[in-house]
Length: 255
Image 1 (spheres, rainbow, N blue to C red):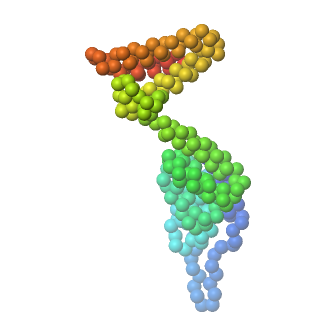
Image 2: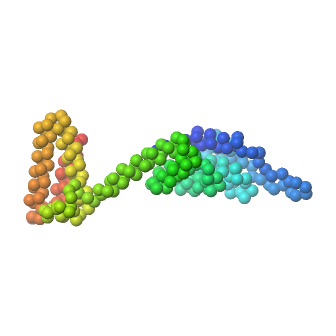
Image 3: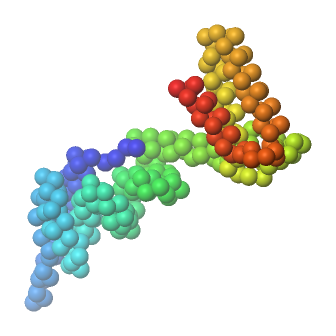
C-alpha cells in the first residue's frame, strides 16, 4: 500500500503556507481587533516534523474558534500526519474528514484517507475515497495506483467468495453419501476444494518434469478418493481428519 511520507506531508503544508493569503482581521474605526491564533508555531513544527510540537501547537490552532479556515486546514493536515505515523488510524481519519468538510477539493487528502480506510480493512470506503480523488484529479498518481490495486484485490476476493463453502464437484449431481456429507458441511466443502486445487498444482508441476511422476501422483489422489468413498460411514472413520491429512500431505509435496 502506498502511504504519504513525512516529506510529502511537509511539501503539502509548505505549499498551502506559500499559497495562502496574508491572514488576520484588521480593526476598522472604533471596533477592537479580533484576536487571532498565531499558526506560525504549528507550521514551524510541521516543517521540521516535530510530532510533539505539532500535536501541541496545531491543536491550539484547530480548537480555537478564532482560527481562519486556511490555517485550520493546514493544522489538521499536520496533526493527521502525526496520528498516521503513530498508527492512530481513527484519529487521522477524523482529522482528514474535517479537512474535507472544510475543503472537499483536496485530492491528496482523499487519497491519504483512502489509504487509512484500506489499512483499517474498510475496502468500500477506501475505494470510494480513491475514486473521489481521481474525479478531482484524473492523473493523480497515488490515487490511480491505489484505486487499481484495490479494485484488483476486490475482484480476487469476489472470486474467492463465489466458491467459498463449495467443494470441487457439483453438489447438485452428488450421489454418494460421502459427497452429500461434504456438500452439507462448509468446512468439509472448503477442504475438498483445497485438496483438489493443491493436487492439481502438484500433479501439474510433477508432470512438467516427468510425465510418469505426474501420473503416479494422480493415481495416489484417485486411491485416496476410493478409500474415502468406501470407508465413509463405517466404524470410527473420521472424514475430516482423513481430508486434513491428505491436504497436509499434498502441501508437503508442493513445498
